[in-house]
Amino acid sequence: MKSQKISTQFFVNYLIIFFLILTLVLTTFLLHNTYTSIVENDLIIDVDKLIDDFYNYDLKTAAKNQKFTSDDYIEVVNEDYEIIDIYNSPKNIGYKYTHKELNKQVYSNNYYEYYLFYIEDTDNFILLHMNPIEQYTEVILLFIVFFIVVFFVSLIVYAKVSSEKIVIPIKKLVNGIEKISKGDYDSKIEFNATNELDLLKNSINQMSVKIKNEINLREKSEDNRKKLILNISHDVKTPLTNIIGYSQTLINEKDLSMDDLQSSIKIINTNGLLANKLINELFELSKLEMNEEMFSTENTDICELLRKKLIEYVSEFEDKNITYNFNIPSENITLNLNVIKFERAIDNLIQNSIKYNGSNFDINITLEKNMDKITIIIEDTGIGIPKEYHDSIFEPMVRVESSRNRALGGTGLGLSITKHIIKKHGGNITLDPSYLDGCRFIITLS
Image (cartoon, rainbow, N blue to C red; front, top):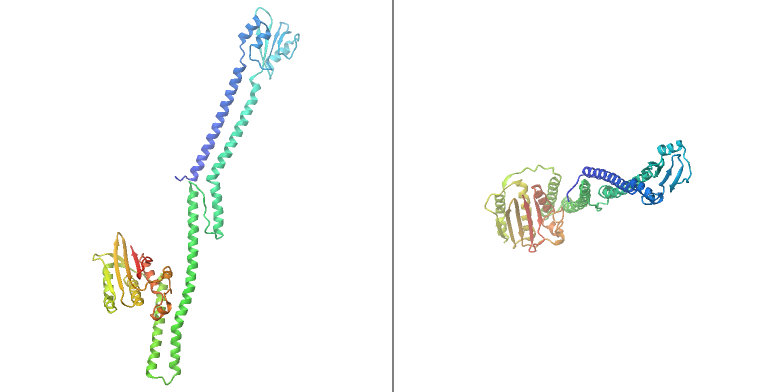
């Protein structure tokens, strides 16, 4: 539907009202003229016929052959101004006018029109009293009332129609904003409009959805932050407890054998390295999330980068009887990459596959180019990740079988760091839920 500006709509409204008034004025004028013309035609007196009928018959017959109203009358007056014959007259035969009275009635009366017709060969004359057209001036008032009533009825109807386009949408906007301001972000403003109000409605609805999403993200972020602090406290506590316990043993025990001494020092070192790794990875993740680290990129052949990186793992794959298949195009495909960080992301995925699957599995790594989109697929035929972890596997400190992770030296931060690195490159990484033979991670870059 074509959009119409409110200013244009108001202009159209004014034009419609103007033409409505003009139409009503013209209609009223034409109706009045038509009516008065009909009345005048109905009141036309054929004077010649009236005189002929008077000569040939009598006054009564002559009058009945004309279109007289109930207030019209005829008087025959002689030379002495005495009424000698009447038709419908309020005066009686024999009534005698004075000269002054006759002149006054004929020339000054405001209610009747008087016409004199002299009778041939006599000094008598016919005095014709006609109800004037002015008597119908009340018809003008009737048509004026008609005009006013029709105008206001039309105005009310049109105002109601116009309100559906402007006033009602504005009320719905106000009510919707009030609900949103009270926290009801699921409330939607609904109305149909073809002007700026429709754009405003859509903007407010979009803003409401955005605010709701922002609040949900903030609440989720707060929950993740609390969970992260709890997990970090738990994960740091274990190696620190071991370090403190075994170091306390070294302090208190004087007669430790060399083997016990070496074992205790090794445990202290292992737990210290684990705590240090956890802190370093947590620090790296924080810098990625807070954009505190410079993230410089350079134009890099991603195919060559992957080939060099994968060669580093060939020896380990063969030692652990891991069947590998690399499908990397021979062409040069260049992207702006931070080489160190991008290699770190690839390392995390490959090392996780080796760490949790051990040996005797397949790993396939493929790079595909489709138009301007680059896809890197890293899949294995290992133990896979349970479905209940698919939605949260890239969140910090989320680990499958945490006790086994701890034994393998996992911190639960590797995949989260990988996702942030890929996002820094303008890409995305997902875990394919349809792949059931192990894990399939899909990286998309453009």
